[in-house]
Image (cartoon, rainbow, N blue to C red; front, side, top):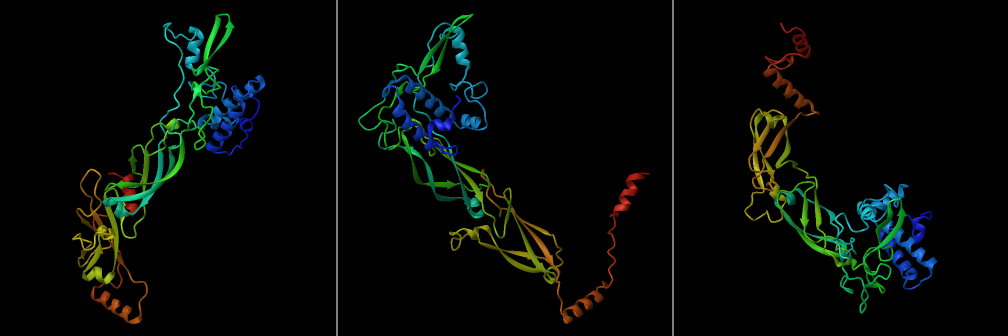
Length: 391
């Protein structure tokens, strides 16, 4: 087809699917053979229908936008009615009867199809991910048209059989070759393979049987979900064309960062910074639990804090494991809370503080520490020497 497909429908290359659909339906009502039997008009109707077949299919449209030929070899998928499909090839050799000689063509395709699945992303807090929550979400999807009930026809009217294919949804093309007559069946361009035409489409849905609407749903997030977890809401996605069954709605979870805890699997990690003196003398620090972030936690008997004992002489990097204080698992059980102590060394000392520290260093004979390697540890050069001189 030499003419640009977008020009045929009178839309731009950036047009959305709904805009393309409306443009086609407007032209179809003007050019349909039942309305205008002129041969030139019928030919234009076929071109418009073929253009819509490509631009209404995301894969074919993408191939066309890349410069491919959606009507030639490699330009469309087998079985889509553009170019030879496997069925077309079998029809060519067996006259449309199939290999066994019995049975007819493929017949009209149904207007009723299952809707697409939908995906939305929902951000929740770490506590909500750990303990579960119910959230209201707003979704914008296709729903059943209440005016026509999904059949696409205006009230008081109904689809009528296509006069071009006589309700079969496909038309035969006969060619002569050295093999004899080759008969192929193709989807009818007039009715797009449906076998029927809607002469008076529903004005509310433009004959599609569905309209877009914003709804409010409640989604229950189970305890233990993590980033990327998808919660499935069955039949809450897009209603299908012709009032077909709805697809599923998937809610993808995104967990917001927490100011205290970091999650690793079902374990929670946190770092507590203590002064050098507290690490040396020992202390007790009160820390919040993840339950403190839950609104119903306070006053409900749930432990919202705990005391962490920092023993005298605690070194920086010391890790304390608190069993069962992590995140509940989706299949039961609960992870741990790992608390790492970071000892903070003072960077600014006044004269009196420096004097006291020097006095302490003198008492501990640490005025000039040598930084000796502990027994059993070797320097880098020592390890390299041993590697090249094993004996």
